[in-house]
Amino acid sequence: MRLLRLGYLIAGAFNALWSLFPLIYVAIGIVIMTAGSIAPAGRNEPGAQFFGLLFAVIGGTISLLIGALAVMKLLTAKALRERKSRTLCLVTAGITCIAIPYGTALGVATFLVLSRPSVRQQFT
Image (cartoon, rainbow, N blue to C red):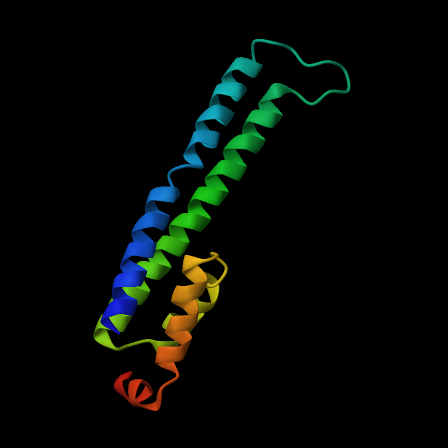
């Protein structure tokens, strides 16, 4: 259980770090929106402001999703330490399995450990 907790702490920290990367697209979108007001769009062409907004929204959404995953992993590490919320641990393990190969190993190990009867009894 301590190793699982450590794995979720490390994975959560890396996800928190990676959640900052899409903010580059938000910055690019803002630059495109401000520069798009200088150059007018053609008749049937969407303006640069639309594409800038699209960049910013997609970058912000991806950043929020990765940040939410980081929070989930950190909360799972806390739940494993306190032996609470087995459901949160299992849901996070399932989502973590998507991240190949380390996330899959962490998720499968979580399923194996949390399915033991002795560990099941420890969770309240």
